[in-house]
Length: 208
Image (tube, rainbow, N blue to C red; front, side, top):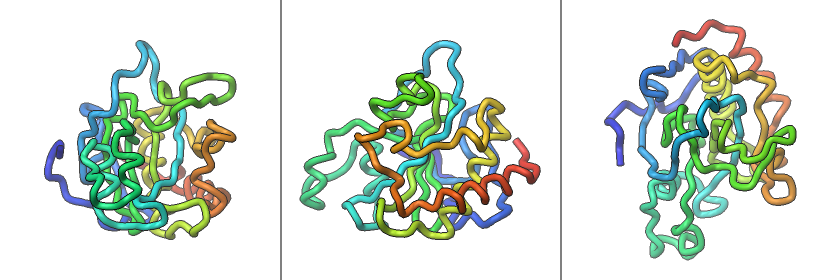
């Protein structure tokens, strides 16, 4: 279900002025699909961690509406044999970045998305409670697109500006918080490149 018919950001270029609306916990000027797979964070808990994931539906294929449909519990099991395995899963992320750098939001930043499952960070269990989850359309073994790195950097810079408890040094992969259970975003994700772009984006002013 759409929250609103906002324009899609086709490609988020380096230096893009992404902004978070602090009144409603949404990123401005991107597509918004309201996922039912979320709930309230524990009382007094704010996001202080960003988790990067990788996803492709069907596995190894890109494009199409399937990530949106999965996160809104509308994935048709007859559209692909793999979908029968995941259609009943109740999962979400706060955002996804498609191959062309387009960003879609599913869960308000002030709410808890269901993206990490069993997880821990620095001895703290249940990372969904205190994190923002970002899905990148991709696989562990295929290089992510340049547009995705730029979109991720600008997105994280906007989040860090809007929510001071977030910072560029608290960005991890799903594999970091669920080792042995999850591998994404995988070896194909260039962490040095991503962190360099994030650091550069965070040095520029971002309006809230």
